[in-house]
Amino acid sequence: MDEIEDIVRRIGRQQGENAYYRSCYVLLKQLQDAVGQAAEDLLRFHQSGAFLSSDDFHPASQIADDLRNAIYDLMCQERKAQLAWEEFC
Image 1 (spheres, one colour):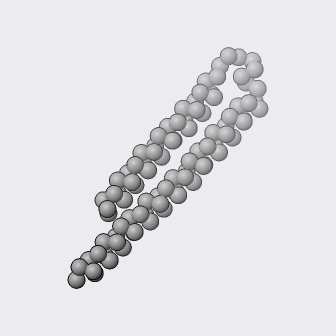
Image 2: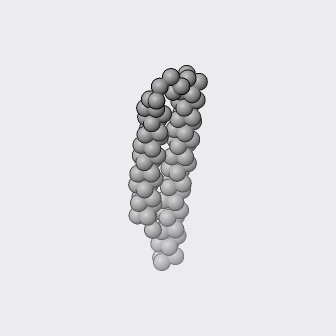
Image 3: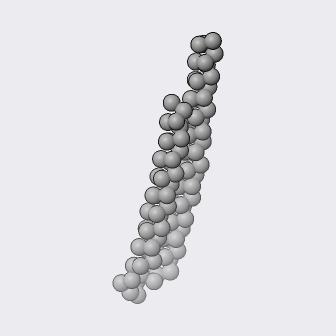
């Protein structure tokens, strides 16, 4: 009976670990999308030449802020996934 309980516990831990890594993969793809979007936005800002005629770098600052916020949100989601995984351990 103890052997069956041990097997069930190991299966549960493995399922928790699998769920965590699935979440991490999804979050990595979201990070990749956010970085790609920021790169496109910065390139568009550069190509517009708007920064040449003024000292207004607000658009670039906004892009950086948006990326930072996206990264923070992803970090929070990763932490939640990690806590959920630790419940299995």
